[in-house]
Length: 141
Image 1 (cartoon, one colour):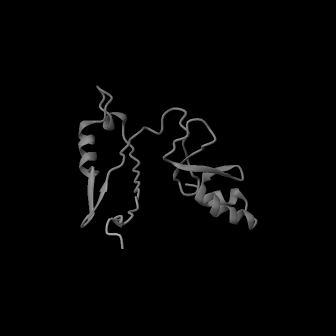
Image 2 (cartoon, rainbow, N blue to C red; image 1 turned 60 degrees about the horizontal axis):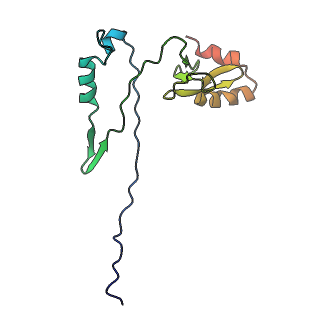
Image 3 (cartoon, rainbow, N blue to C red; image 1 turned 180 degrees about the horizontal axis):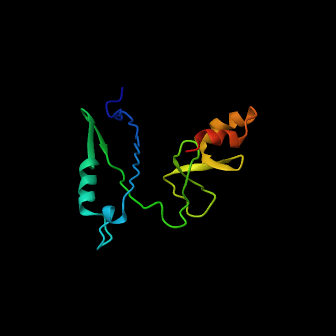
């Protein structure tokens, strides 16, 4: 056996797991953004830093490193923003201008825009002979 050959160190391959969490905040503009500077309100910023640290311990020797932290206004004039008539989640239509990519994608079912999940579930009811109107009636506020 050749003593001069060194074998490569066997390394365990680790998986990268991205955890994404979104919160929807309803607030007056000046409650979130500083009215003078337009920057993030100092108190809100401190609260966000405290609740969403750059590094979080999940268990012994397992840490999560913050990948991104974003905030944006989504209900601006002419926003590509709708609510699913079934589950009431916010959705966006990717086929129209200015989609909001962090929201669920809208899908059309019988002329009604709804989230993909509800469209998939309601498609069976349509196939069984129910009308879209009778389905929507059940979910009206």
